[in-house]
Figure 1 (spheres, helix red, strand yellow):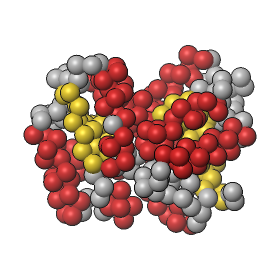
Figure 2: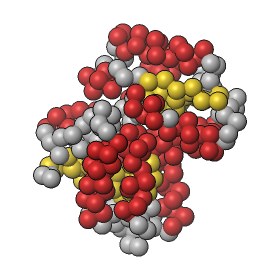
Figure 3: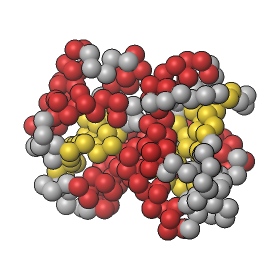
Figure 4: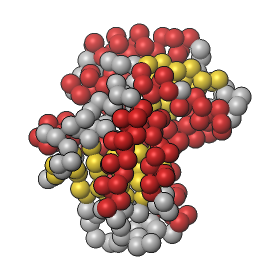
Length: 267
């Protein structure tokens, strides 16, 4: 496989840009094509069949871009449709944020007591708990849905008193279980890391599945011998299904840099 081919990363909307940011920092020579299905977000309120159908469409689009790896950067998609991606991808390696986050949590936990926060759909799917228990059946997992975090992050209220009070309320039951690691089971949540660290205190490690996904991608690319060694600047494409301007405005906050041109596709 040609190592100069891009990595395809996709999400139901904007949150997956935290994964792209981690990839840019960990793998600066890699080209990336990011797809955000902004016309049909949120996925969390849709049926499994609908999510599988949308995921298949996006997977096919990215395969047409001649990608060398696919990364499912949406926890909802990863929870209910990762198998759809793998079936369509064939020989193309597929990674997802749940697998990466679960592996890192098990590796880092000393007390074998792990908390998971995510959207209601991700938490209700039990995907993190299942994957963590598959890796280590003795780990205790405590999950907490945090539905208000996504709108607060998109509003830019990253260090707002309302966000702090919300975090304190959501994390009370998890802290009561004396977890030593907390998995950020939504790609919006890395933007809240400074605030969450304050609320949690020094005894709880944060597992950022954006960073762990980038680490897993780096290891996989090198193991397969398809890591880019191209010395020139890496190219980045950002593709959405609706309102590129809004995506650009909020997306630059997630990415920590300018997005440049954003493409819109019509289904």
